Amino acid sequence: MAVDLLLGLQWGDEGKGKIVDVLTKNYDIIARFQGGPNAGHTLEFDGIKHVLHTIPSGIFHKNAMNVVGNGVVIDPVIFRKELDALKQFNLDIKSKLVISRKAHLILPTHRLLDAASETAKGKAKIGSTLKGIGPTYMDKTGRNGMRIGDLELDDWKEKYRALADKHEAMIDYYNVDIEYDLAELENEFFASVEELKNLDFIDSEEYLYQAQKSGKKILAEGAQGSLLDIDFGTYPFVTSSNTTAAGACTGLGVAPNQIGEVLGIFKAYTTRVGSGPFPTELFDDDGETMGRVGNEFGATTGRPRRCGWLDLIALKYAVQVNGVTELMMMKADVLSGFETLKICTAYNYKGQKITHLPYNIEAENVTPIYSEMKGWKEDLTKMSKPEEFPSALQDYIDFLEKELEVPIKIVSVGPDRTQTIHR
Ligand code: GDP
Ligand code: IMO
Ligand code: MG
Image (cartoon, protein in one colour):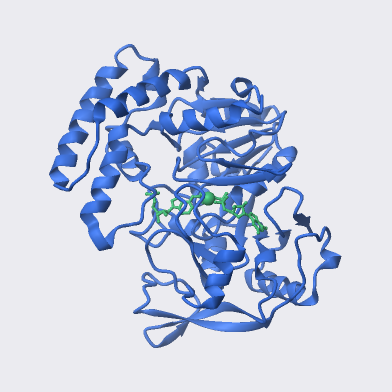
């Protein structure tokens, strides 16, 4: 059985959580492969909204196993809060959630280092979620990190101490004003680690290999989006992991020839939270409307998301880099009521018309060139089949499918599980 991937194709928050929840009934295992609690994946059903950060979005389904893979970075403190929030739903978490021994740990000092680094950058800050993601991946690639498997060793606290002491010296180096009480943070951290230890730590690559061999269906759940990829995103305004398809191979130990469908998810418009270039960003009433109707506030930080028209150049790039085989268009309902819709189909790049994503998409180099399409007025949120779509929405979908050369298999018309239209 091949492993399918579900990946965000923009700057994150495309609606991955919702769709993973919708698709879980077709899978035996949902596995996160990168990122950490910088992610905020929202699921909505039975009138309740859930936000998950590290726990895979299959957790509410009775029969699905959920794996936190080796490529993920875990903050025990946030993980414990997630577990606490799930307690009231009687999910028997221990039997449905396992963690890779090779996943790295976010220490309290990683979070402090993130804050120190961002403060030191001033105006040039990345707009990090301040969850310690960058510093943790730095320690991973620098070969200094601590892993979940270390927690099974007797001397893990010594290892912890040495690393935390080093981090404190690094925080001093930044010479910025950051107030913290490390003793308090450590108490919370150690207590959370004990809680985490109630879950099973596994050799997840072996687990997934055996599962696959015995015919189990696996869906890898991406976090962030392709334009936040450490290699292919809008560097340096990116996250610190590979959010693209290849990240699922290294983040789970799945061989490239075992990848099946690559499900790419995008919003019918574009959003971005944090700093960095965003060619189709709107600063007018249209952008304000998208933000208001789409309720565009970060699920992790609560920050307002920047909004703009769909950027087909960036989307094509993401489809290409990931080898997307099926598309899912989210939040179509948010575009109801716009007289005219714009889609960026080329860039004016230093005076030249181009149709690929160049090295630098800062506003001084790139201005979007738009195609215009007729909007629709109809409320989509109660629709249940594609036959009900207004013709202007159908035209919008047809146009995108033709340009992207990949079918749009799902159109989402609201945050609830049920507001999902299969084509
Ligand atoms: P993720 O990080 O990709 O899982 O996405 P987020 O959960 O951060 O952000 C997506 C937001 O849009 C959440 O608040 C969802 O509840 C909401 N959402 C998802 N799909 C739709 C949709 O089709 N229409 C509307 N209006 N909201 C949606
Ligand atoms: P999900 O999985 C949207 C952004 C941050 C910042 C940059 C780096 O919910 O789609 P980091 O904390 O990783 O150092 O931040 O990446 N970012 C996200 N934006 N959705 C996310 O996750 C994000 N995770 C990180 O805003 O610009
Ligand atoms: Mg999110």
